[in-house]
Length: 287
Ligand code: AMP
Image 1 (spheres, rainbow, N blue to C red):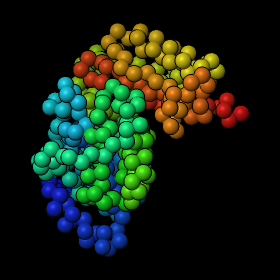
Image 2 (image 1 turned 30 degrees about the vertical axis):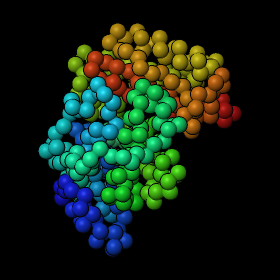
Image 3 (image 1 turned 135 degrees about the vertical axis):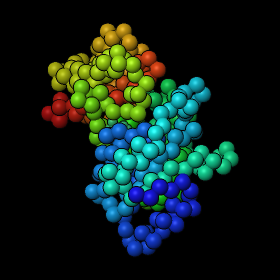
């Protein structure tokens, strides 16, 4: 695996592959990798000729007072992990390479990007859309892999790619979880052992949502109330967001469940803000 830190060098390395008609699979990350990231890289390895991963903690997507400075970093470990799954190139640019000056051009997906997590973190998705556009321009991938754990992020990127006719296929990958069901996240490192144990409540709340829908709970509002109550029973959990949405549009479904129900949770445990979600097929809608 070749590790590259400048845009010029990466373009020089990838150009010949492109000329030979090789497909390029791209896995953008912020590093401090875990099995979730590696699963994206394995998918890319399976599907495409050349696998490029990036590690870049993007300052544009962090708000004031968020964890940009504290975000965990361990490039040597990440490098070995990416190598072990057959990554060909690791692009890990310093901030000054990506943003030599404060950018005056942004990519914004303001409707989708201001909902849900975007309401809690203003400008977050503008930062994501801008850096992903920049990385797509640098790597020019055939396919790019994103985790469904960040469901809204996948929606925002898909919309951006469609609206701007970007020549890349977006491939979503299911969430990888620990044995107890907690979604893997670089931010889990912020959890104390006690908070880590408490965090199982997120995944359990999603399982509860599924069974309540199957049992025919009356409305999205009733489901939201039950989930809030269930999460609040855990004293270490602080709710930022419990949302029931139409999984295809992220819109509020009003009184009736849509065909595909997104249940999205954004909950604080100590210093960590954890995100988890599930899409539930509404069997009633099929019948
Ligand atoms: P991050 O480094 O957190 O920005 O994540 C980089 C990519 O890995 C994003 O597309 C995430 O959605 C994805 N990802 C993070 N955690 C998981 C997980 N537990 N399972 C699958 N994909 C994940």
